[in-house]
Each structure stands twice: as C-alpha cells, then as structure tokens.
Length: 145
Image (cartoon, rainbow, N blue to C red):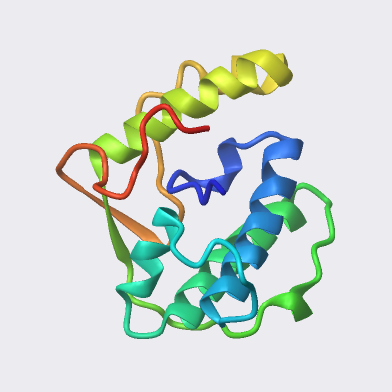
C-alpha cells in the first residue's frame, strides 16, 4: 500500500488509479471492514487525527479531483465522509523520499510523465498535508515497494 504524500498531479495514470484503489482500501481498513492491513504503517498518520475516516475521505476527494481534471470518472459515492479536515504534517524528507521513489517508477513505466516531472524543484504535497522540516517519517519502510 502506498498512500502518497506528494500531490497526485505528479502521478501517471496507473499510479493515480492505484492510489484511488489503495485509498479506498485504507478507508475500509480504518472503518474495521477488513481483516488485512490493520497495522499498515501508512495508516498511522490517519489514525493520529481526530477523525481518521474524515481524514482519509478528504485525502480521497483530492485524488478524485485530480482524476476529474484528467477526464477520468472515479465514483464519489465510495467516499464515506469528507469535509474540512485539519492538515496532517509530513516531513520534507518524506516528500523527497517519495519523490525519488516515484521517479524510479515513472522512468520504468511512463517515460513521458517522468520527463515532465524530473525537473521539478519545489514538490507539492497532497493538499491534505503540510510540509514541515524533518527526515523520512518514522512509519516509512525504506526499501519496501
């Protein structure tokens, strides 16, 4: 499961669709509707919020907006709850780590998107996140794809 901290605009089609599916899976996990992934480290940041279902729903809304911008149709009715949600801090080192991870994936599967992204200097976070100083997040597992 990869719930990107970087803005979904940087993802290729395959990555955006995968992120939507994984976000929906995260929502089910947080609602207690699955047996697996209960302790997945990427869910820790959502669990730390006042309302994890609102947080993951707000995360999904932004993915859906990016999909709509590209002319895709994701089913909004699958989002259980969304609205005003406090931003979640993400460390700058995490953004950089994810950026490098994404570039490796894009270079292998979407050279045109790779070419568009490789020169980006000021990377944007997903709108749910606020970039703060620091390294890779404690929950990250470097080397795990």
